[in-house]
Length: 218
Length: 394
Image 1 (cartoon, rainbow over the protein chains, first blue to last red):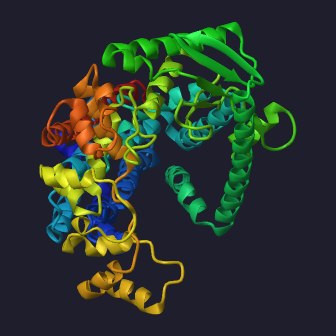
Image 2: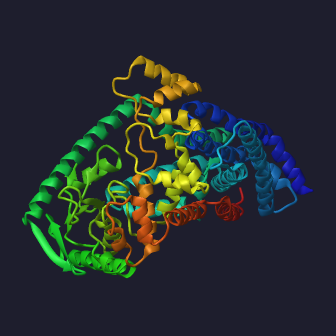
Image 3: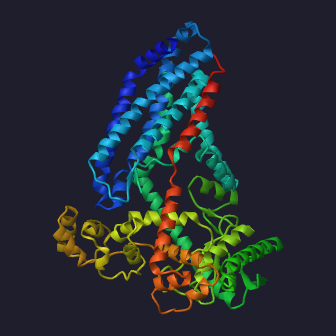
């Protein structure tokens, strides 16, 4: 009952955002194909892959942005009221945070479903050569989990950092860039590569953003 | 206040994610990058000239350090080497020697280290000033610093490759035994009995699982239909793929009517193309089949398949043939490459091609990264982040 109420509040606060990202995700495969297909040239399998090559990075970007905003915006509304609403509820703080997190995560599925429908629609317009395969379900699942990761990071950043979330994020970005330069200056490219692998390769946290963003592949 | 912070965070994220794209589209950045590339190319050419000169000097017996590893003479050029470096190189070559001898018998061992010449590349420094400053410039992408610890060009001169025809391989300094072993295994293919231009310089005897999945991708994505038919099991098409491409004119077996547009897209137009040819190419792209045919009669098509792809067939034939395969490969130097490889593998050409295709498709299947491992790790990370979040109250 309490969770339904929190889910309702979350939906009310973020419905415009969810619908906007869902519309974007739905249109992206067809739009990406239309933008790239004419440039790809020919009807070879490589032409088909090039035709969809814009869709992967676009989806990753939208996943990152939507996940981030879906956590940041409700928190900012809560924070504007000094968190009176959650503190007035007859539940513990960890329970509230968990329910708020799950409510937001459920709503993240809506853009992912829209992306899946958009992918299926785009694929229905073209006849793929026999050597190529389409992976709409895997692509949409990857989008959902990437969104979830961005959402979790943003959620943690907002709830842990509070008003310092923005400086913390900027600080982390600057520290990341400076560390890269310092390691290169010191000739420690091996260490730099090892750190990058730690974050970007499975089971690192950002592995979901790095590989596998292909709607069509061999 | 909180809205402003949220907007600030979003803005920072958008700028951080977009900046590489914006930078890439800026014409000033492109011009600067071009200038850097030209400069880099100039320095690399100068380095290559120095290498050639030193190679000649070394082969003439000047500035040479020799020792024997795995029964083969190894010569080092130019740079002074510590005892530790020399021992690491000798150890690496010995390992490669033993591994190939185990796989292919005595003729396999001979592929390693025979008159091996390791030529260290010159140290080039961009910019002026201390090493630290140069490194800083390099890190900030202002210049490029190539130091002793980063790049060592290595040249393995085979007995029948000629002075400048040696295989090249980048070996980091200080040399490690496992790197030298990999280098020796990768470049040993340069000393195999000649297959004319079939797979020159692209046969590796090291374990390289990625080569097989790459081969399957190349076949699948080729603009020419034989590759695509081959990957789905047409052995006649695989045979066509393994036919050396003469690069002149249009071979009918490569051009399926459905490939015409793609073929015209990759075709190299003559330098002085007349307007009719250019117009035909444009019409072809608009699905005019007759125009495509006219273009194809007048253009030169690039080889649809790389030597690297054909190199995998050589590697497969040697793997299947095992001990003695190198000797059999040398047995009939005038025969066609496919026949020679089949003889080396002791299979019929069809069986060889079939097993090669299966190996490539299996590697491709194995190389596919599914969503579930990443999804699982994302769930774990999200749970950890949620757990951390619950610990703090506002």
